[in-house]
Length: 261
Figure (cartoon, one colour):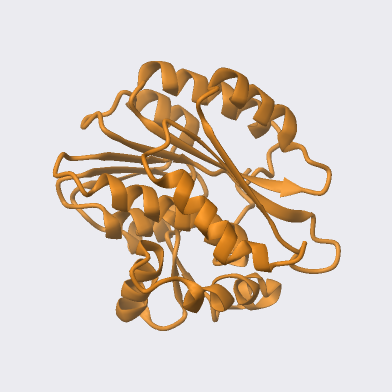
């Protein structure tokens, strides 16, 4: 469970899908002055160097954000966040979801970020330092359950494990069911990979049965390299905010529909 490092995959097409959706949801939520809570169960290090050895080894960012950034409208909150982070950290910087959230949220909002991997946890502490941001070296599922309902009650929880641990496909829907019962107004956004052998399908059936009003959105794209099993990216959102479905459909039409699976 502690072997996964997102630096090899930062900025890939799945990140574009997930982070564009997250930025859109948070930008909408912050239109109102009322404070928010943000919880993330698998945070990673929050800031990545796309010129680094890891990103260069896989080439996934080159097929992802490097190609797509200029296709996004200048007013898109995901694009604006990346450009702001690059102004501060250099042209090859890429923000993970914790840094996207920290950039879009306000000082009155509260962030809780969980990361178990010792090196990633240390880097996360280095990359995000703010009074309203709490960083936990703890199992992310356990943290989310322990914090809900959070204060402030309005907010979003992002769950995006590495999926290298097969039990995630069983643990996640059970955890989401618990969170939704304890936090009935919370937005719960789940990211999952679409792999060639489709291990996500039983989990997705459980999520759709438990949360029939949830929003499911998937995109397909070519594998990053020969033998790569990921051929798409999925999001399932409990209590989706207004406008998210339309934004995701627009994302598919303008970006992902041009990619041949």
